[in-house]
Image (cartoon, rainbow, N blue to C red; front, side, top):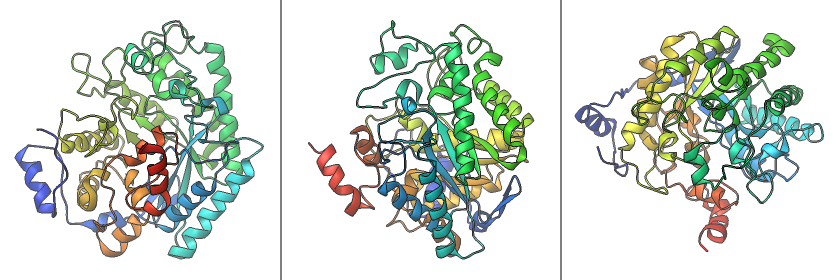
Length: 443
């Protein structure tokens, strides 16, 4: 199946291709399932829709939310989604993916409290007092993708020839030590403490897209207590979760956005088939999910790939830096069915599904099919939320998405980020982000 630009008008159109090519996706007309309430650790979401964490580059240099960040979350909060998964916040300044990424500290925690309060106010003002979104802060260290100042300052868990070559990392570059990782565990706990102080309902220990936690999961060739065996490779993530749980118990949600598959050849990829890296092998990722479940983690946001190496895997697109060898529907199915593996293994866990933006106005039909098939309990939107922050209200109130508002997966938001500009939707939010695109991407 070759890639194609999106050209479907009706649910029947997309179902025709799904049936023709034997793709494991269900299309449903029962949009009511997206209106389902969902219980997360006793917190009742008013619907089954979420805004995904989208790594930003428009904070202030001290790590606090800037004006565009505040504007974005006012729009998300008013948009009606039951779950707002707040974007990546670095636990230490040197772990930022760009100089304007958010980073929480004792000095700026009040600014995070302010943006949390704004979200709560906007949500109630737009949707009534019965609507209180669950807000999870994503905690991250960008690892080999760290750019805390103007220069790339990679912090690598081990030498990966595929990523080293792509990002010009020399074999002599130092690897983060066990003692540095051990100290960093406590930085995550400190950041979680600040997130709770700011009012957030919980934190996500970001384990995806080949940032530091994610990279350690594939550290087969690393020596020491954080590499080699499955127990060692998962130690960093599980230690952080154990420490946060020990401090806060059940009063604070601990979640994760977790890669189930990296799409990088073994032994440098996580969740990959050892013989064919284009296929996933869920044995180890599901084993980790079991350990998370045993620790009381009941909220997992499932994703795959890395936007720095194989972006078509985690966000199928019409236009990007290269043309993938697969049809976008195959990529959508991989994401949805990967989440389904987790949901079916632990039916009482709340799995947030990924991979719906490419489907545009037909996303609600495929999302409803996924929920009906038990492949997720919540459906998340990332790029689509940039373009269409009120998507949830439209789905809940009208049963559909307006095609004139939908993300067209043109990758211009990514172009802005790679150009070290301010990232947002150039097409649907052109008044704000069009000038940045012209200045920084059309030189």
